[in-house]
Amino acid sequence: MSTDSDGGWNSGPSTEGETFTDGDSTTEHVGFLERLWQSLVGILIGFGLIAATIWGIFWNEGRAIGTTRALNEGAGVTISVPAARVDAANEGKLVHTSGNLSGGPLADSEFQIRSQAVRLVRKVEMYQWKEERRTENRSNAGGSQTRTTTYTYERVWSDRPISSQNFRQRDAHQNPAMPITGRTETASGAMLGGFRADSRVIGLYGSSAERRLDVTQAQLAPFQSRFGNRAQLNDGGVYVGSDTGNPQIGDLRISYSILPEGLASIVARQNGEGFGPYTASNGREVFLGAMGARTAQELYQGAHETNRIITWVLRGVMLFSVWLGFFLILRPFVVLADVIPIFGSAMAAGAGLVSVALALVVFLPTIAIAWFWHRPVMSIALIVAGFAGAYGFRMLGERRRAAKAVAPPAGGAMSGGQPMGYQPAFAGHGGYPQGAPPRPGYAAQPAYDPNAYPPQPQQGYPQGGYGQPAYPPQQPAPQSGGFLNVPPGLRPGQGG
Image (tube, rainbow, N blue to C red):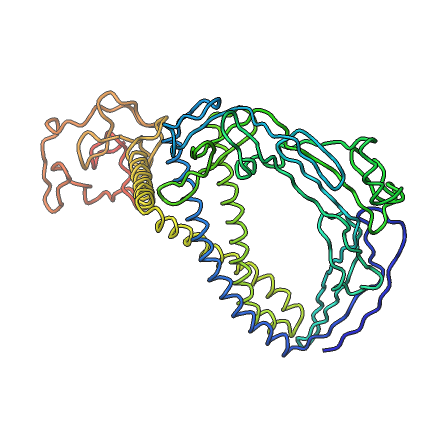
C-alpha cells in the first residue's frame, strides 16, 4: 500500500457554509489480494449485520404493536376531569384534563436574563471548522484499486463543539474551545390548573411550543462585561464577534427562547397532586401532552401518528441495513470480476440488484413472522381472509369465463357459415326451420317433412340418414373443398 498527498487551504472570505477544496487529498493504492481479503472479512460483517437487523425488525414491530395496544387500552379507560382541583377519588386512574400551565420567574443567572415562563432555554452557537471526507475509487487492470480521499473544510455554526484534533490539517483548521454552552431552566413550582407539573410533565411540551425571547439593550451589559465590546445585539440575540456580516472562527451567537404560560392538555396517571406515566397491562407507558385545549381523542390520534412515523422510519433504516449486509456478502464476486474493470462495474451493479431482491425476500417475511409472533390471532385472521379473497376472485373469474363461453355473441355472429344457435329441422339433415329466410341463390324451401318422402331403398346402395340413397350410381357426389355440397332445404340426392 502506498500513500501520497498534497495539501493546502484557502483563507478567503469567511462566509457561512463556504467550502475549501483546493488540493487537500490522499491517494492510496490497494492491491488485489488486499481487496479480496477485505471483502472476505466483509462477509462476516454482512452476516452479522443481517442477523442484528432481523432482531431489530422483531424489536421494532414489537415496539410498534405494544405502543398501539397501550394507546388503545389507555383510550378505553381515560376519564376527563376538571383541572381546577384535585379529586382524590381519581388517584391512580388515567385522566385527561386541560388547564392553564403556569410557571414562575426564571433567570439565566450568568447573564441576568429573566422571564416569567415555564421553561427558559439558552442556545449558544459557535462558528467552527468542519471536516468532510469524500473517497473515490478507481479500479485498475489486474484487480488493484486506486483510492483518492479528498478532505474539504467548511465553516459552520454549531451548538456543539467540533474537535479539530483528528483533522488532517489540524494546524490550519484549529477550533477554539466554546467559552459558554447552552442551558435550560425549568420552573420548579409549575402548575397545570390545580395539579403540580414537574419536569417530566413540562418535558411533554417540546421545543415546537417555545417562542423566542428577545434580548434588550438594557440586558446587554452582562454580556459586554464577559466578552467586551465584541458583544452586540443582533436579530433578537447577542452576537460576539467583530462583524456580524463576516463571521470568524470562534464567533458566538447567543439566543433565548421560553415555553410560555398558557392553556395545555395532558393524558396521564393521577399521582397524588400531580401526574405520572400510566403503565398499561403490557408494560408500555401512556404519557401524552400538548399545548392548547386538546381532547383526549386528539392526543391519542397524535400519539398513534407519531408511532406510525417512527415505525416506518425504522423500517426504512433496517431495509437498507439488510441490503448492505447482502451487498457485503456478494462483494468478493465484485472484487474477482474487477480484474477486468468493465466486468467489475457490471458485477457491482448486478450485486446491488441481487442484494435488493434478497433484502426484500428476507425483510418482508421477517415482518410477517414478527407480526405473527406478536399478534398471532390477527395474523391468522389476515391470512385466512387473504386466501378467502383470492379463492373468491378465482371462482368469480371462472364463472365469468363460463358465461362468456355459452352466451351467443350479439348481432347474429356467424359460426362455420351458419348463424349461432341455428339447428336443422332434423339431426343429420341440413335445412332452415319453417319460415326461415332462404340462403342467397336458393329458393325458399319448407322444413323437411319425413312423411312426405317415404323410404325408397335402392339395391346396391346404402340408405341415407332418412331412408334415401346418398347418390345414384351414375351421378357422383358433387364436391366443394372435400365436403358434400348440399344446399340447405334439399334432401340428399336432390338437385338444386
